[in-house]
Length: 48
Image (cartoon, rainbow, N blue to C red):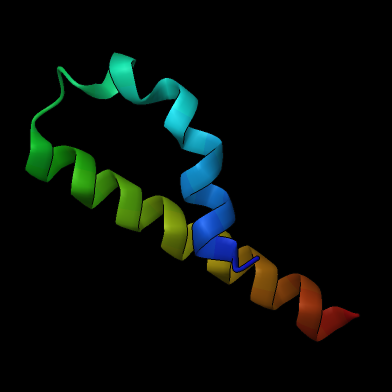
């Protein structure tokens, strides 16, 4: 399972709480979170 799919799947349970957020703001935050997770994954995989 790809990192993006895993991260999205882990956040689906919280979707009703996020419905009140502005859609663009939520999309931006999601992409920032994905970028952070990918950066951390790359750092971990490059040191191992």
